[in-house]
Structures are given as structure tokens and as C-alpha cells.
Length: 67
Image (tube, rainbow, N blue to C red; front, top):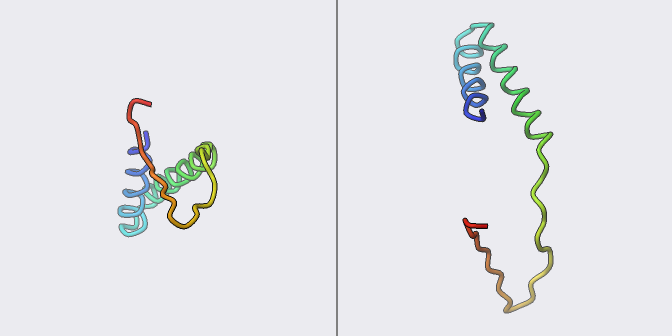
């Protein structure tokens, strides 16, 4: 679904704004509104750790695909 919204925004810009076709401007506008709504409605990732590192301390970030 995300690729469809991106394609709508891209074609709306190319064919609508740059090409002068009003229908594609509307398609691009609807796709942009869907993109912004999705970003506004999805929840943010949880913070797992927050803190300061002192001199000489190391932070290792790792991603386990099984989890």
C-alpha cells in the first residue's frame, strides 16, 4: 500500500504539477494527504534505553532478526 501512495505522489507531481494535468494534481494531493495521515496516526517506537555514557563507556546497538 505504501508503494501505491508514493507512486500517486510521484505521478501527481510529474504529470500534474509539471505536466499541467488537473486530475493528476488531485491524485497527488490525495496521495500526499494519505501519506501525512499515516504518519500522524502511527504510533512511535518505544524507547528501550535512555541515558548518558561516561568517558570510556561503550554502547553497542544490535538488531536480532528473530526477535
